[in-house]
Length: 97
Image 1: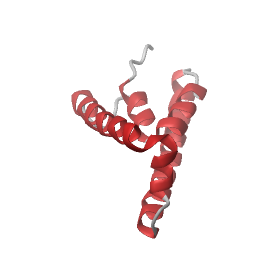
Image 2: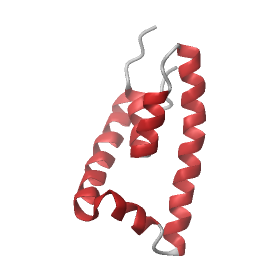
Image 3: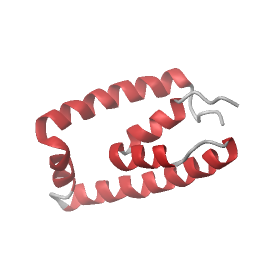
Image 4: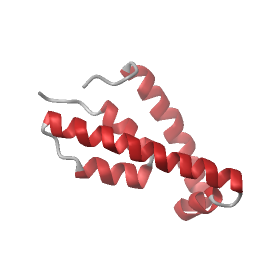
């Protein structure tokens, strides 16, 4: 399956967001990111929205993995641990068919 956006643009988003996420991780730690996400009602809404969006993405990834004969479990773990960074990595991962 071709990614929804050109690979160079996805790569740029991954690089910029990955760098920001790493900076945030170094500032507050992994648990601190989650704690911050639930610190206010607005933060909770955004965090829950991220969970819903990643769940939808996992459905897409699972279906695409079945179609392509790829293992789903590594991508499940990547999205659960890294959120949208895991989904971006999936979209950029080379497909051998």
